Image (tube, rainbow, N blue to C red):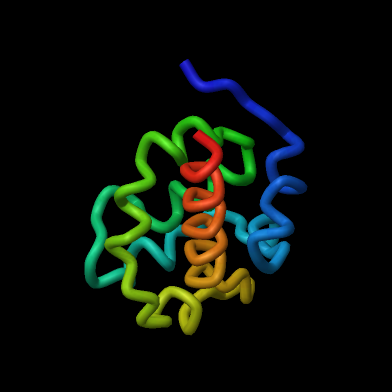
Length: 100
């Protein structure tokens, strides 16, 4: 069972742009991503929005499948920059792995 932390968006600010809330989960990024299935990066962005950091950490290996090609960012209708959000999550995971 996931613990929901509405302040998680604030925790993410030191790791990159504060743009996760700009995403409205339309799924365009997941549809265009050439490498990932299972609604990535859409689901990771949603996990930030709802504060499900345990799910992010449980599925952290998926973050390194992203090669930061930019297709998701180019097609995002809200300018949420999903690629940068994924980079921020990578930074977050590395920092939290060091602490454990």
